[in-house]
Length: 74
Image (tube, rainbow, N blue to C red; front, top):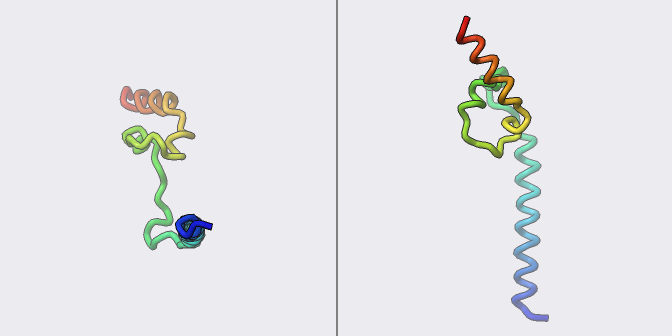
């Protein structure tokens, strides 16, 4: 067996283990004090340019735009 192949496999296994450990630790991290009540507003999401965000994907943008326009007319 080529020694470089064994080294490559070891590095890949190490990276996968590191990813799993960091993912689990991130999920267990508590919310910082003062941030427990923060709500995500629809207007904030409209101004956000991150289209990969899971919240952005679930947001019905057309509905929110209509609501904002109707509030501005009142």
